[in-house]
Length: 531
Image 1 (cartoon, rainbow, N blue to C red):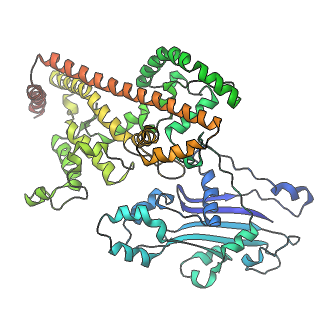
Image 2 (image 1 turned 90 degrees about the vertical axis):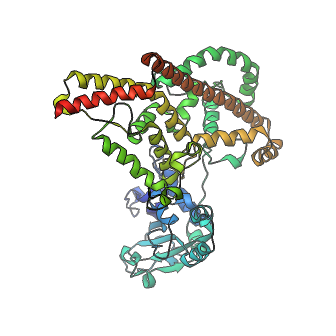
Image 3 (image 1 turned 180 degrees about the horizontal axis):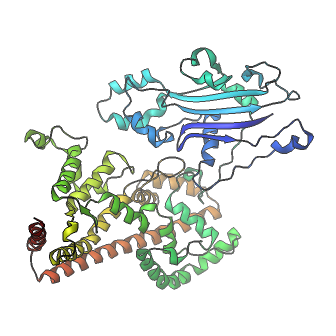
């Protein structure tokens, strides 16, 4: 008897995935022992753990929450109403079990529905659905944000059940009532003996940290693993500057930590324990800090990104106006500038929006994108191909190139802040945590006067010497991380100041309006010659 197939639907990023165990004829003597061990191999974040986590949640009766639903269904869940299809929103797990005549069927009998002598298959169906009536009743009483209520409380309105079924047709809506046979989870526990040992993906002194996946947890892991596989040559230009600074600081750090690391090596029995350079921190921080991702974000989200043109000036302005419709204020509606008040009134005009923690999608993130576009402005219009070789067109391109280069540091800074305060969706296990929030949590943990510090202190008081060493390493890592973060902020400030000085010198003290007038004159000249 063995599990031959596992299928997961609507769980995290497993939208509809099937795991099939190799087809082996267990009636043959040569194959009888081949189901004693199965290996699931795949790249990181491909969903290996998710299969087991989902099975564990159903098996142990652990609650599912908002972030266990796939990203593609979260908007539907947040907009839950009387017309919502609970079957479409259901998290499901299917297990197919193969058996032979020689197997004892005492524990499997509850799931065997087909008694044909040549059928040796049983099917188990786990399903977690929203209790529609209870959730709608609760939403009717909510006077604040219903979306926030659903995110925080959906677990209380989810129901998990286990069924036996014969064939896939039984799962269709019209057949479910009579063909799905409700079973007790105890029947599953009699049949399947499940024990999961979770990998400690973070080096921590307490189980309270398991699964958080913080930047500092990954840093601590590297303290124990020694040299990182990432090479300096793979870092981007900005990170290279940080790496240069690290080289100057490494000698100081090595001297400072020398006695501490010797003691740590003896206690932990590790040979390659060392101070991790800040350059390795930059390789672990979320993808928002990767220079390539940052460039792509700027190019994809900023209408007037360096080197980008619009078909016409009118179209460029219209694009900005259309985006603003989602963030119209009551005053704009009253004055006839907007048809209705937006979901996030005025957020695309408020700098505080950039510093608001959010997911990497949704209204708040879109407001951040709109805010940056409002600052940068509309893209410059294209040059007619017929005039591309004219002196006026060439002057126009040169002036735009200079303008793009001068404003680039400001755009980079704004988008870096935006991404630091926005989480990622690509993390196995649900929603990623924004970089800014990770720093905030770690500072609260170690700085005192917070619930996080109180909890950490309780855990620390019961730690072994090894646990205390781990925590000391993590605190040193936080110091290094904050120093690197501050250094990058200084770099961006320096780049912006350099751009302002260059602009001042270039214009000989002329105002921005005069410079824009020059660009407009070039555009008018091109249009005149075209006509």
